[in-house]
Each structure stands twice: as structure tokens, then as C-alpha cells.
Amino acid sequence: MSDLILDHIRVRRGERTILHDISLRFTAGGLTAVIGPNGAGKSTMLDLAAGLLVPDAGTVRLGDIALATIGRKLLAQRRAYLPQRAGVEWPISVERVVALGLTPSLPAFGVLPDRLVPAVEEALAACDLLALRDRPATALSGGELARTMLARAIVGDPELLIVDEPTAGLDPRHAIDAMRRLRARADAGRTVIVAIHDLDLALNHADNIVAIRDGRLLTQGPVAEVVTEDLLATLYDVRIRILRDADGVAVRFLDDRRSG
Ligand SMILES: Nc1ncnc2c1ncn2[C@@H]1O[C@H](COP(=O)(O)OP(=O)(O)OP(=O)(O)O)[C@@H](O)[C@H]1O
Image (cartoon, protein in one colour):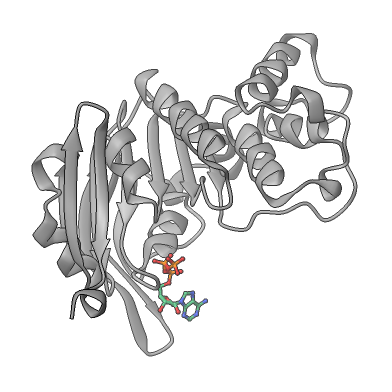
């Protein structure tokens, strides 16, 4: 298993620099939450980490190997990337969508080999999809579709798992389930990177935080060491209180206009 390393990365889009000289390490066996306000550059960072975007400067490495030099098929076998708003364009069953996550491991022709069937069952069960397995994915609610796409991302047990907003649109139980699934992948030694706006979920489930704003890295490190009220206030321009008790951590955003 390998760390994913961004080394002096810069990304430009037209005249704008979207990511400024970012160096950081996503550790294998860790779940890293990438946090920051809208437009901070989180999805751009995930695109880079997935090898879908080539930086204008710097390198992205999986262990010792530059991502850009890993062949497309091998990369598809080693990493799964679930972008924001991933969807399904035509009516294909939930089970088939999940099985598509195994495509990089399949022979080019023929049916799904027997040895891969248990992985699909496991992913369906893990994402609470057994009752929906025969439904067309085009006829799912937003949250059901999000669970289906997460199952597709985890079914191949990739070494590098990158997920953009895995809990958006999920109800509380399924959101916690999704984070637990990702946590389990990290506990199994995988490198798991999640961009997320829900700070309660991030702080309770992630090992590490990467905080970015305006394309600049504010901080990175273990949640317990780097996350403070000051950091979150600077990140989001809102007064923030972090509440800790035996059940975990909760973040409260304070609306100054209400107390005025
Ligand atoms: N293809 C593009 N061309 C030009 N600018 C882009 C492009 N994609 C993203 N951007 C800009 O880059 C910046 C970072 O976008 P990005 O999607 O990475 O932010 P984000 O942190 O994921 O935001 P959000 O929380 O809203 O999803 C934004 O200002 C965005 O408008």
C-alpha cells in the first residue's frame, strides 16, 4: 500500500491559479478529509489525486511512482474515483452499476467471473442496496443513487479510494454508514481521500484533515492536532464552536447577526 504525495503542485485554469504550490501526503491506512469553502479547490485536488488532471507544475506520486507514468488500466485497477454528482445515463440495474466498479479487473469479454460475485454481494449489502439490486439506477432517489455509486467505488477494493462529497444528499443513518464504509477501507490499509462539507462527519470519522482555502493549503495533519475553532473560523469566515463529549465532536456555526 502506498501514500499518495502531492509535491509542489500548481494548477491554473485560464488566467487563474486554482491551486498554489501545494505539497502534502495522503497516508495509506488513513482516511483524510479535505475541507474548505465552496470554490476552495477541493474537487480540483481530488481530480489531481485521481490522475485525471495534470498539474501545471509539480508531481503527484503514488508511493515512488509518478501517477502520470502509471498505465491507464493499471491506474484504474489501483484507484477508484467517485466524483461529485456522478450519475447514470441509461436504465441499468443497481447490481450492474455496482459490478461496473470491477471493470478494470475483468477480462475484456464474457460474463462476470464467479470469483467476483461475492464482492458485488458484499458491496450491495454494505451500502444497504440488496432490496434495490434489480431496480433501474435511473429510477432511484438521489440518496439511493449516491449509495449505488459509492458501492461501485468500493467494490473493487482499490488501494487508492477518492470520493467527492460521499454524504451529500444522504439521510443521517446512510451518511454515517458511508463514512463507516470509508473508514473500514482505511483500516484495511487503503489510502482514502474524501472531500466533504459535513464537518461533524469529517471530524468524527477522519484521521487527517487537509484544509484549503482559495487554492492554498491552510493546514494538514491529524484531526485532533490541527482542527481548532480558529482554523475553522479562518477557513469558513464564520464564528465556530467545537463541542466535545463522550459521543464525539460537534461543530456549531454561530450566526453573529442573531445575537446582535
Ligand atoms: N474547468 C474549469 N475552468 C475554470 N475554472 C474552474 C474549472 N473548474 C473549477 N474551476 C474553478 O476552480 C475553483 C476551484 O473549484 P473546485 O471545484 O475545485 O472547488 P471546490 O472546493 O470543490 O468547491 P465546492 O465545495 O463548491 O464543490 C473555483 O473557483 C472554480 O470556479
